[in-house]
Image (cartoon, rainbow, N blue to C red; front, side, top):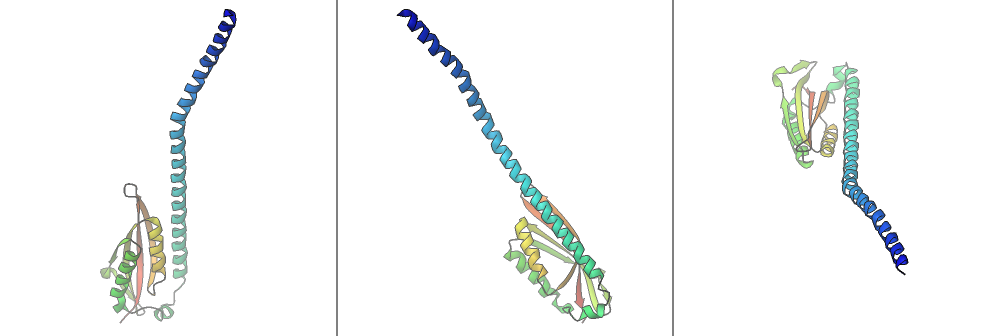
Amino acid sequence: MKPMNNIATLYHRYHIDMALPLVLCMAIILLLGIPLAQQLVLDNQELRTHQQREYMAEQVQEGAQQQQAEYAQIDDTSMLSHSLVTQDHIIEFIESLENTATAYTVTEQMELFHDKQSIKNGIVIIPATITARGSWENLMRFFGRIEEFDFYINPRSINISEDSITHTTQMTIDTLTYWEQL
């Protein structure tokens, strides 16, 4: 009977000797593989978010360029003057910007350059810079709402940057604002 016991012991030991390295390999794969797989998923999500933001920024830039081309076609300022708000509504314009920024959780700052204003055929053209900070989604809503204003704004350039620490986006738009002269 002893020889059978030896064969059974050898057979049992063979399985243990084969199973132990297999279990160790599986443990190593699980300990290293799961965190790596999680990191890959996170990196992939971050890449998609970045690509979406770049696409949206390109769309904003293309929209601004298209608007500029359309505005450049308007040479007859007499037609334009009938659709402009008078110059005494500038404070209302600034308040509208501030209220819209508050509504969309965006911080904004506007600077009108009165010293660089020009007057052409009864139209006052005042350069301005609008800087807004917030989440990408809120900035898009904020500027979308500004497009609905009755005030005539001609964007000249748009600069978009992101703060990687606070995860906020900053948009700076250099514009020309148009007003009917008093």
